[in-house]
Amino acid sequence: MSVTMKQQWIFPILCALSMGFWACSSPTSPAEPSGPGGSSNSVHPSDPARPSDPGNPSDPANPSDPANPSDPANPSDPANPSDPDVPGISGKQTIYYYGNGNTWGTTLISESQDDENSTTVTLKDRGDLYRVGYQFTGWNTSSDGTGDNFEAGSSIPKNGKTIKLYAQWKEVFPFVSAGEKFSTLLTESGRLYSAGDNTDGRLGNGTTVPQRQFVPVSGAVAGAGIKAAISGKDHSFAILNDGTTLGWGKSDAGKLGNKADHGSALLPVIPLYTIDGDAIPAVRIASVSAGKNQTALLTENGEYWAAGGRYYGALGNGNGSMQLTFEKIADGILSVSTGEDYVMTIKNDGTLYAAGNGWLGRTGTTANTKNGLTLIADAGSDNSLVFAGKLNHTMILKKDGRLFAAGYNELGQLGVGNLTNQNSFKPVIDSAGNPLTGVVYVSLGETHSMILGSDGTLWAAGNNRRKQLGINGLIAQTRAVKVLENVARVAAGFDHTLAVTEDGKLWAAGSNRNGQFGANTGLPGYSAWTEIDISSLH
Image (cartoon, rainbow, N blue to C red; front, top):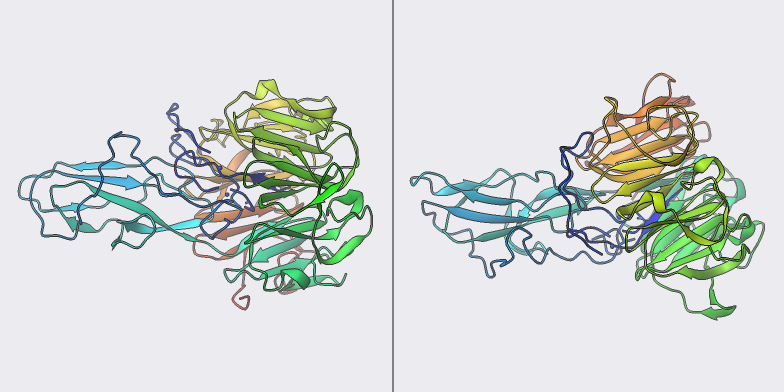
């Protein structure tokens, strides 16, 4: 599975992945949260994939990252703040802190009431501010980082005037994605690598020879300026800096969009776009979701395009037919994700729609919706992101950071506290039985779920028979449990998981039987978190 969404700046937010990552609304103030975020006042991602400009999610990847134009706590946002680097004076000092592209958290306002003898004020840390795929590096007097830099916790002189400070973010690499028995990895220089099973050319290096260490993806992506890559069951797509895409791997059902309904592409190919059968120029893509038999694209202006989809009307095109080129399905889409023979979308108004096979309740209903995208009314209108699993389960992220799940649950992958399949969306809970809150991103494998919190904690639920949750032991987890900290990115494959911490280190868990960790062959077949040396990749 992969997720796509257009950039939604609920606060200054990231677009997200490949992704995309969209339009905005003010955060709500729900009850005291539990779980990963610590705060329910949120701004939600737009695919945590990598951004259009490494300035983000347009995951999935993201449009430009605007600065926060106004202070939500003070409508008359003070203009022309004074330079803080002036001789200090005693008394009151007001500082506005801006998230500046954060995907979660509230803009902080600090009003110092120090005694008359104090001439300095101590700057806050990031508080609950968080940005998927980025590391907080401090504050700056300019949103674009061209002003004066200050470390969190440092002291600056008081000047008696309002000071505005903007959070500074550094994008964390590598960008990772995971498919069935293989992985893809994007470095800071824009070079794409892959490792693992190479059946049907899923590694994109012109051969079908498996690789136990990361090797470059070849052909048109070499040196092409890539900003994101997303892997499905047996095919992958890359998004280039100009918004165009390239796909490779298995091409059955037309899911590469290059008019082929069988076979495979051993090297990246350029997909085709049509309207009523007539070819049109390529559209600018913000994010990609690669399912089993289909591919979904989300454009920078919120259009959902799709190719493939042999069964059950899984594209949502209303006629149930397979498409060998990418055709537009819908407008006004905030998030889209496709799984095995079904697709889920969230519209700009926060409502959830589904098409395709509803087997085991994975669409929030057991019905097969072959006649186009169908409203899932029970899901409400407060949804911000949707994530379809690689097999039979789905999660939706609410605007306030709560997470809900539906579908196949015999290994606990829904994280709802039991092993019962769910045909409507139920809240994901933590180990104490409380609803999980502060969620900013999710990646779903075949029978396991990886959940990223706004404080950088990584939570997991479901199947652990191959240690894909990163936990030693083989016991399935029916509730979300904390498995790693300081995480910037996560990708769940069919039975393995990749995570990137804020310091740029790559960690892998689960099955490495096909070399999907991209490490040396000395690693065991199944393992909990293992650091992968990628120092040779540039």
